[in-house]
Every structure is written in C-alpha cells, then in structure tokens.
Image (cartoon, rainbow, N blue to C red):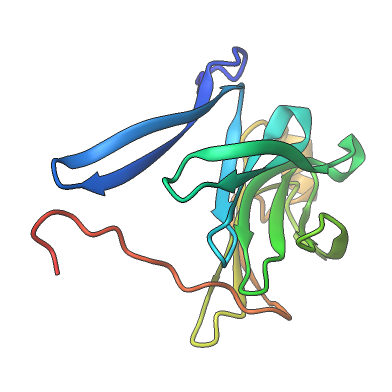
Length: 181
C-alpha cells in the first residue's frame, strides 16, 4: 500500500509453498489502506479491511487458493471508527479493531454486531487470541496522529491491552520453510 495513505495502490497477496519454492499471488487491488486479514475456521472465507472506506470485505476461498465472490461483510459507520486489524474466532465470528473508534467489535458470521469491548485508546489496531484456552484477547493500539490534548485524555494510547473473550480464538499455523519439519 502507499505509505502516504493517499493512493489506492495497495493489493491483497498470498504466499504458497510449492515444489519450486514460494509463489506470490495477487488477488485484489485498489486499497489505500488494507488491513486484516483473517480466515474463517473452516478455511472457506477470507476477510480483509478497506480501512478508509469503513469496509470489511468477505471473499470465498476456492480450492486452489484463489479469492472469489468479493462482497461487503460489514460497513462501519464513521462514528464507530474505521476497521483495522481483524481476526476470526473458533466459531467464525470476526473481531475487528477500530481506528478512531476505541473498541474491538465482534461480528457474527452473518455480519451482525454481537459485542463491543471498550479500549482506553482511540486508535485500536489489532486484536488476537492467546493463552492456554485461546480466550485472552490481546489488543494493540497506536499513538499516531494524536494531539497532545488527545494523549492527555487517553494516556494509554500506544499500549497493549487484554480482556477475557467469551469465545476462543483459533490456533495459529506455522508456515513451514523448505527443509523444516
């Protein structure tokens, strides 16, 4: 993506490991700021954010790894912030951090908001799951673009936060490099 966040030059890519090494594939273009992405627990859907436009897209993942049937999964109204990092839990709910929104919002697989968790920072950047039961939500935030007045009001901006989620996350899978077991 464009580091100045002004040109829609960003794209979604995937990396696959094949017999000849790694293969880089571009799947979608036209993003000014792309964020996310996350995959549903059944591996059938990919979710990616078009942050400045307030959109979370949903793609079907074909058996060969191509992305198809792009559709709007969630359109966040500006007063709720802008979708940033997303993660899917073990039941297929999509958890979304909100830039300029001070929340992590959880959406059902149908795109209906089911929960919102207040974070003491306006620019919430990413949520992920950890802990032995994968129910500890870890949330990052940023200080970027905040005035001294805003930082005085939200001094924990840029910090890492946790809360207990009512749903478990998914275990992460490691990308194996050639020769690794």
